Amino acid sequence: MAPWLQLLLLLGLLPAAAPASSKPPAAGAQAWELASPELREPARFALEMYNRGRAAGTRAALGAVRGRVRRAGRGSLYSLKATLVEPPCNDPTVCQLPVSKKTLLCSFEVLDELGKHMLLRRDCGPVDTKTTDDKNETFSSFLPLLNKDPLPQDFSVKMASIFKDFVTTYNRTYDSQEEASWRMSVFANNMVRAQKIQALDRGTAQYGVTKFSDLTEEEFRTIYLNPLLKDAPGKNMRLAQPVTDVPPPQWDWRNKGAVTDVKDQGMCGSCWAFSVTGNVEGQWFLKRGTLLSLSEQELLDCDKTDKACLGGLPSNAYSAIRTLGGLETEDDYSYRGHLQTCSFSAEKAKVYINDSVELSKNEQKLAAWLAKKGPISVAINAFGMQFYRHGISHPLRPLCSPWLIDHAVLLVGYGNRSATPFWAIKNSWGTNWGEEGYYYLHRGSGACGVNIMASSAVIN
Image 1 (tube, rainbow, N blue to C red):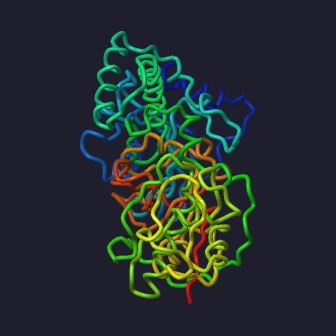
Image 2: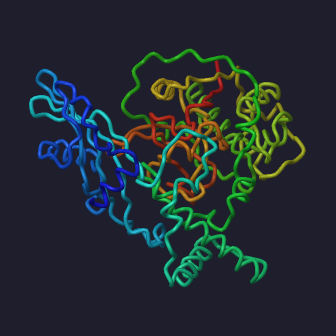
């Protein structure tokens, strides 16, 4: 038996031999067939749709194909299972390991009506995964083959060179040789993790060296993320009236003057404050026509419900702004990145809010609201963001559970890149992270819980 047939059999996708008494296929449908000539054209079309928008050197090749067809009227519906082989990555900042190719197992449904094809469904995943929605699934269970790959003999030499470049690029200094050695070992482990994340991502994102690459996962979570988002209930907010307009195909508030420059929260879990000020900045601009950079430090110091650098909730922050009487500007109350004594002055407050609202969990309705009403405060699961460099991120759902959100950010726009729908997200880790400080996440699939905790201030 051919190797790919053995693989399909092991994965339960190849039916066992039917007993003599089994019933024949229903009328109008063919049983699963291997390499039927009739499957070639719809399979090539499915591959073309999969590769749409990809550069020449990054397109997948078609491997084994099998399928069946159902006929109705003037059309034929093809249900296909195919293996696709993606070429090796050639980005030296991402691919230091010997995982040369990525093999995917895909299910396609292609409709052929009078010779015109339409892709109705595409579902692809690595051949060695078992994709479930179990939020307790461990990351390693998705990587049984990658975990067994031996490291090349010159791995340490290559990694030392890459680590040296990292230290120079991000101006790292360490207190001792022992700490430098330890950080290099953390860095090497992180490069292995980044490449595993890369192998399992279904979008166009590239993962690799970032300014966080010498931090352990625990350090990164403790310093930069916000565990309160998934644990604390926060203030109740009324549900916003939906926007009934059909959203335009793309929108970006950055081009319309409603978004301040990317900020940097530093070594402080204050993302919640940046998410809220970004929203209020946009709301004030839309209502008053003036874009002001507002103070996150005021919220760290004066919002007594939240926990400053240990995390907080946007719903609580809106309430604090109303209780305090407004927000000062960044110039008047500058950011320090640690808790200080509250020094808010009502006389210096330049912006106020009247209320806050919870938004729909439907992404189409979120897009409509954003295009008409302004940037939206949201919270997401930050899986993979420690190593995100550019592109549209689309992790497997079990790896980026919507029930484990831990980072607050700001939706500023949406659109499509080469037919891949995305949310444009303003982050608060400085412009030397991601795409000049921005993160792009798949839109329409509830990726990483982006639709779970959407909210906005209200300014009358």
